[in-house]
Image (cartoon, rainbow, N blue to C red; front, side, top):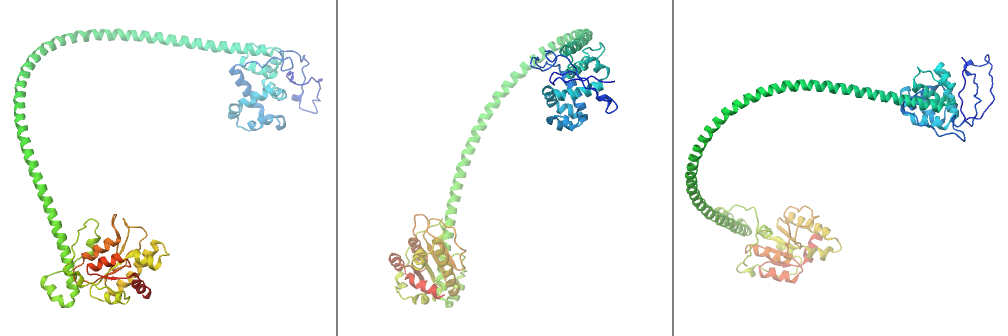
Length: 483
């Protein structure tokens, strides 16, 4: 049947236009309501009232109806904010697009008219009745209010108010019914609880009588137990007194034994400490004496092979200079008798080769004294590396023991691995390299050739007094340059 397009005072009033049914769709025939646009109840005109507050079921139904017809509208008739919503799945369109749909229905009367035309077409007779301003008594008030909001005929606000009242009345009826049902359930539970309580009360009375009987028996047993307990406690007090006496005697005896044991352990610890010190001193003295004797016999040469075999002296693992380098065993040495017998002062650079040719010679080098004189333009690390590398060549050529001494309280980083036959020492904190060189010379046995290379006059004089051969730094630098 031909439909009447709903009245909406947001649109300008136009003359009715009759469309040719043969040329177009009969369902598209629209008749514009000629009602007075100034009616304050009909829309959003200049004198229009504000939008009514819709009950939640009515609002949801309006959104659902609009979401259902969105895909049927041409794209150019759908507002831009709703074009993306129109592409949603049906079950998501009303749920996710509800705020945008409601806003467009309120703000865009033309869009609302287009939606209303299709909704009324789907509503049939109910839609026609709502457009006429009436509502069937048997119709769903939510559906009537939703159609009235979209079509907005005369008195549509009254239809919405009536629908809201019906919805509220229905909700109130549901609440009342629920309250009645809960009250009935509570009454049923209370009756059941009373019956159960009566049964439990009978059981408790029987249980109380039995408990009273048992309580009488327990009281008699308790009196007997109390009497027995008093007798037992008296015997226990006597036993406790005897036990305390015995414990006191045992404690005094144990204290005496512990005191004697502590004294014995203290004497044992003192004896072990004295024995350890004696063993360490004897071992160290024996090691130093063996090293000196072994080096002295090596200096004599192959002629002393028979004597060394007769004395059963084996080669030692540590040399006298190793004992001097030990940071934890500093032993002040005594100057050997007659050291001047081996001291020879010479400034001849050729003497270095002659002295290094002596059997079991020991070359001691004042490190920084030589490097700063020969290649002082380098960094200290490069100076140490160059000197140690050159001394490694001398040790390899002559087979002599070579020791180089540097100033320094602790070992420095950046040293290359010491070549075979070269010992690198750093003076300890509070000690200079000159003092360490003198200690190295004093540690050597009398008769062993010791060559000290240093241009420091004080060092040369000091080692000369102990029988060493002092040479200037230039002799070693020319020897290294020649290698």
